[in-house]
Length: 203
Length: 280
Image (tube, rainbow over all chains, first blue to last red):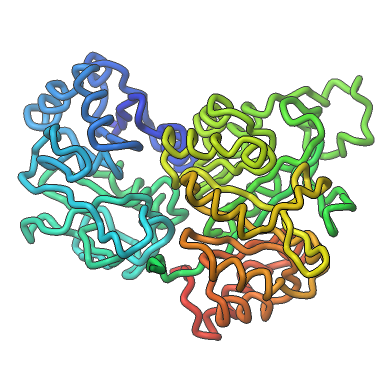
C-alpha cells in the first residue's frame, strides 16, 4: 500500500508551508478537516502555530482528540507532531496551565529562561541519535529552524532522539513506537528538513 | 539588561520587487531591473539560505502586471500581450512561498491586521511593516498580539542628516525627522519581534555597512537587529559580525550580481571562525 499523509487542518496550523514542502518531495498527502477524512491515510502530521491552549481548544472544538487517539492507538498510524503539535503530545504546558494536552506522555512543557531572547527563533544545531528513524541520512549537528518560547526539558530517556541547546539543553525531538514529535520546523529547515519529512513518510 | 540570544548569525538575502520585476537600488533612488521574481526565489532556495526577505516597493502594492512566462520584462512588454497578467499580491505571495523551504519575510503595503493575516496565510512566515507602522504604531502591537511578535519585523530606513540618524518613510522619500533611537524604543515597546535597519546612505554602494549607525542601534535595543545597506564584499560581513555582532546581516545586490556569493560569504565567515549555520 502506498503511504499517504493526513495533515490535520485547523485554524492554528501554518499548513501551507508544510504542504508546499511535501509537494516539493512528492509525498502524497491530504488535508484532514474532520474525523472521516482519516480513512485512507497511513500517516498523520499535526502542525501547530500559536499557543498551546489555542491549539488544543481548536482541536477539541473539531472533535479531533478522540479520532486522533483512535487512529494512533487503535489503527497504529504513524504520527508526527510539529512545534506546538509536538508539545500537544504532552500532558500540559506552562503556557496555559488550565488546559490539558493530548497527554500521550506525562511530562510538562516548560517556559524557557527569561534571561534569553524569546522566542528562540532561527537556526540551531541539533544533536541526534543516529539510530533514529527520523534522522536517517541526516548528518550529526545539522541545523534546523526553531520558533518557540516553551520546550520539553525532561523525559524518559528512551523516547529522546535529539537535543538542542538554547538557554539550556532541551529535547528537540522524540520517538516512541509510532509516535514522533519535533520541536523545530522541518518544512522550513531546507534540505535537512525535507530529508526528515521523507524519512517519516517512508515509515 | 541585555538578553542573550541565538549565537548563530543569520545571513539574509533581500529581494526588492517593483512592478513585476526584481530591481537593484542605489541610495533608494535608482531602480534597475535585474530579474524575474520567481526565478530568483527558486535559485535562492537552492542556495540553502538561512532566510529570505522579500520587499514589494511597487507603486501599486495590491495588484501588478506580471509576465507569467518569465522571459520578458513586464515594463517593456505590452499589457495587451496575453502572457501579461494582472496578479494580486496574495496570489503572488502564495506562488513565492511555494519555492521557499526557508523562512520568508514579506513586506510592502501592509496597512492592517487583516492584510497581515492574509499575507501570512498565503505562506509568508513573517510580515515586515514600515510606513504603516510609523503612521500607526498601534498596528505593531495589534499584529504582535494577533500573530506573535516573532512574525512581526519592523523595517526602518535611515539617513544621516547633520550628524543625526533620522527615520525615513514612503520608500525612503519622506523625512520624518524622528531620531532612529526614539523610533526603535517605541517599536520595541509595541512588541516588534525584529528590526530591519536599512541605511539609505550606504544602500547599493557596496563600500561596507554603516558601523556608527549599527553600533548606536545595537547599544539601544534588546530585540534582534538585522543590519542592511552597503555589503559589497565578504569581508564586510565578517568585519561587522566580529566587531558588533548583530543578530543578522542582510544584503541585496551582492547576492544577485556575484555568482556563488552566498556560498563564498559563508565559507569566508567559517574561515574567520564566526558562528553561522553551515551546510552539512
